Each structure stands twice: as C-alpha cells, then as structure tokens.
Amino acid sequence: MGEESLRLLSLLSLLPEGLAREDLPALLPGTGHEAASGLRKVGLAFDQGHRLRVLAPIREHVQRNHPPQNEDFDRLVDHHLTLARIGDRIGGAGGAEAADRLRSEMGNLEPMILAGLEREDPVPAIRAALAFTNAVRFTGVGELTLIGCALQAARDAAQLGLEADCLHKMGDIHLYRAHYQQAQEHYEHAQEIYQRAGDSHGTACCMARRAEIHLQQTKPDDARRLYEQALVRFCELSDPHWEAQSLLGLGYAAVQRAEKVGRPHLIHALALFRQLGDVRGEANCLQYLAQASLDAGDYADAREEYESALSGFRRVGSILGEASCLRCLGHIAVWQGNPQVAETLVNKALLLCRRVGSRLGEANCHFVLGEAARARFAHETAEELLQKALVLFRQLGQPTGVGNCLESLGSNAAARSDLPGAHRYLNEALRILGEIPQPVSFGRVQLKLARISTNPFERQAHLEAARQIWDATGELEPKHHELEEPDLD
Image 1 (cartoon, rainbow, N blue to C red):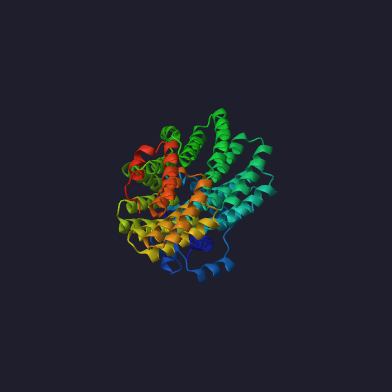
Image 2 (cartoon, rainbow, N blue to C red; image 1 turned 90 degrees about the vertical axis):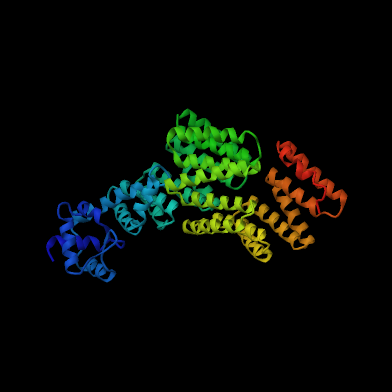
C-alpha cells in the first residue's frame, strides 16, 4: 500500500458512513482516485453503491495507530462543513436533491461538525450545525444533540446572533414535532436575545413562529394578534417572504374561525410565494386552501389543492408536508366511500410521520384510519384506533383533534346502537369544539345529536343551534338540505 493510500485510509477511518467517490478529489487533490484503487487492491476498502467504505474493525485500528496528518484532517473537516451547509436548501428550491445528497452523509457530518466546534474560530461549524439541524428536521435522519453543542459554542464565543439562531432552530424542531411548550420557551429566549442584539428581523421571525404555535393549538385569536404585529414589522423591513408567511398564518387563523376573509388572505400569500419562487410556501398555502374547500364541502377542489401541495412538498424534500397531504387525501377518500384507498394512503403517511418523529402526524393518521375502519363497519377496530388517536391528541394539547375524535367515537357508538355512549361522546365533543371555537365542526356535532335524539324538543334545539351557527358563518345554504331531512333517527 502506497503512502497516498495510507493517507486516504486515515481519513476514511473517521467516516462511519464511508465516502462518496465524487468527493475523493476534494480530500486528496490529484491523488484521491489512485489512492482508493490502492486500498481496494489490498482489501482494506470496498465499494458499496457509489460510496467507498472501510469495515469498522479496520477503522478503529487505523484511528488508534494511524491518525491523519493535520493538513489532511483540516481539509476533511472543511469539506464536511461545506457539505452540511446544503441542509439549508431542504424545504426550499432544490430541497429534494439536497436531502438525497445528505441522507447518506449524516453519520459523517456530526463528528466533523463537532471537530469544527473545537476550533479557535467555531463560527463556520456553528453555521454548519444550523444547516445540519434543518436537514434532521425535514428528513428525520440524524441526531439533534449537535445543535445544543453549537449553542454552547456560540455562547462561549460571545456570538449573540448565532446563539439566538441556535435557540430559534431548536424551537423549529420542537414546533415541527408538536412539542409546543419547549418550542415556545426556545422562541421566547431567542426573541429576547435578538432584541438585545438589535436584530429586528430575528425578533419578528420569533413572533411569527410563536403565532404558529397558537395556530397549531387552535387559538386563532392569539395567533392573529402576533401575526398582525409581525406583518407590520416585515412590511417595514421589506421582507416579502416573511410578509407572505404572516399572511398565510392570518389566512389559516381565519379558516379556523370559518371567516370568509381566510381564502383571500391565503390567495394573496400564494401569489407572493409564487413571485418569490418559494415552493414550500406555495404548498403550505395550497394545503390550507384545501382545508377551506373541505370545510365548504367542496371535495373536488380540496383534492386538487392537496395533490398540488403534495407535489410541491416532494420537490422541496418536506416529508411531513408530504405525509400531511397523503393523510388528507385519504380522509377525502373516506368521505367519498373508498375506505380501502384511504387506508393505503394513510398508512404511507403514518410511516413518514414516524420517520420524522411527528407524534401529531401519527395522531392524525390514527384518527383517519379510525374513520376508514368505521366506514367499513369495523366498529371495534375503529374504536381502538380512535382511542389511540384521542390519547395522543390529549397528550399534545390538541383540542381540535380531541373534539374530532370524540365526535367520531360518538358516531361509532351510535352505529353500534350504544346511544348512551354516543350522547356522552358527542356532548363532550360539543363542549370542546364550542370552546376553541370550531364553528363548522360544532354545527356538525349538533346535527348528529339531533339525529340520535329521541326527545323532539331536544332534537329541535340541536337543529336550531346548528342552523344558527351555519347561518353566522355563511354555511347555511349548502347545509340547508341536511337540516330539512324528514327522518333524523
């Protein structure tokens, strides 16, 4: 084995995931491919797909006895810090390609970034850690401990802006995984540091993220207040991307309250995202527009909007966005009488949610699978799945999910002729959905209670309550025929 092969072997000993052959010239300029050939000939390295690998026992021996030269090691670390930075693309233009490139590198990137954090100037490694964490967030591959190390390095180096960026990124991870309390704490801490550093943009971004937490917890009034404040700041800063994000949030807050202004806000945000070429922002708008279409009972438009959003999420490498669209398309299939199709779509979504660690995504999938089982008259299976979803929604502080589960459990109980159970579930759903508030769902539960009521006065009271709320939200005309059903038993 020649000297160049030994140099390469020393570097490979530090890479548990091996090395992409295309990266050989970057590590050993001019001699990389020749050195690799030498290692193959003596059986110390082998090809696996497009990667050059070394077995773990050999790597451990070489690490102990043949550490790399300082110059080679620095080049190795610099190469992986640069590689990690493409993690920022995931969720944006070229995100799917970036995700594919990094999936096989995640096990290498973490030790290389940690080595970079030990340098006299840790700033490049801190930036690499932020991008690495973005990749973990969207792909579900890799560990989250690195961002904590980057946070400490930023504090030690008195880098206030990067310290806030790390806290912000930690908040993003917790928000993505529906850990709302932790996300809130990180965003508040980051906002405080941004304010101290005089960073108005970072401050406004944290406000928008905190608004998103309220949105996910179905608190549209609290979300709207923060989004409106953030929108003013982003307009002053001439930031069209975050202006569009704020309009998106305001639109969905209005959709949650069944307000007609929701769709115009979302369409405005969609136009801005398209002007910016922001595919993920566009996909998020389409997803929320689809929800508004569903609330209006327009399944055809909702399906088209979800399919368009699904295509966008796939292009940018957003696994959770992909899972959400698959699940919603499955739910539409349930409503249109295709429970088997629904189960196929939702089981795919469930695997993706587990891959990125989204317990909220899992809860939503269990709920739709329960709805599909109910549509197949598999009432025991439906009960089991809906109860599983109910537990998760309660743990995650998701009142809308809890209310929807209770409503479905009530319908399931009624189908099994368990009227006391149906009344219990539906009345509890009514209480929760009335507090959020969720006008569309609230009216639907009132109608279901009317259908199972044996007391004509109670039945009429439930029908009148449904009529009033749908009249207030402009939904009375499409719902009119349901209220006029001659036989509601």
